[in-house]
Image (cartoon, rainbow, N blue to C red; front, side):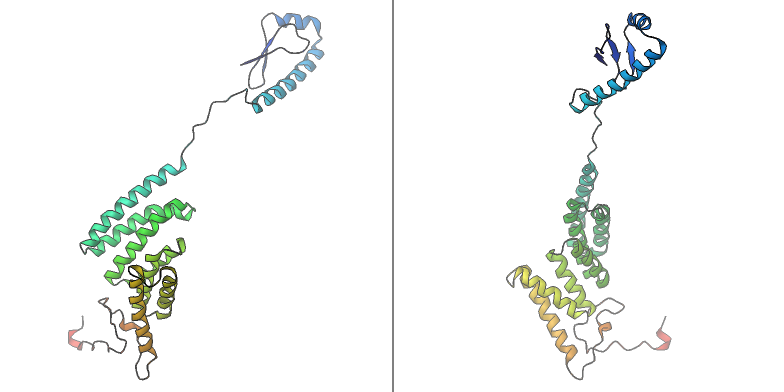
Length: 256
């Protein structure tokens, strides 16, 4: 409460932060003797206006303090989810190293699912881990022969981070397997511009580019029929040469 001595009043009155006026004990008799009821009403209205003005002024200067509202860290939940996704990514890496590509791909996806909502809201802190999980999932899918799913994962990675090198390399590999050779070549050239043709990433890109270049030459060679469906048959195996004929159909009695 705030005690203010009002003008033309011999005794103080108590003013609450809500602007309510409570005359101190002993002052009401004096006020009633000096003013008619109409004057007292006008005086009360004037005092009410004055009190509100004073409280507004003191509040703006920091003299009136309200109970502080506890602040909630909006990033606390996201940080916990990032840490959880990182741990799941490490577990999936262990599965990948043991050639357990199917459960690894599933765990990479579950790790990514923890962060997709944050990325959609524009939380940049979630993007590096999310891109890592999706790119690793693409690597597992490539091992499984699920090339379209791998490309879809890489597309999302590159929307979040166009400079993500592993995501672009794996998309080039997926496009190569899908027969989308111009797209694969474009990704390879973009990567070579960024990393050069040296050891490491550059060497991997050059290997993919050479294969794609060879396939493009095969496609354009006269007398050879290009059939991208031969790249991925029902067993999801890669055929390196487009002129390799498909396996003969099974006899009628052997079909399921």
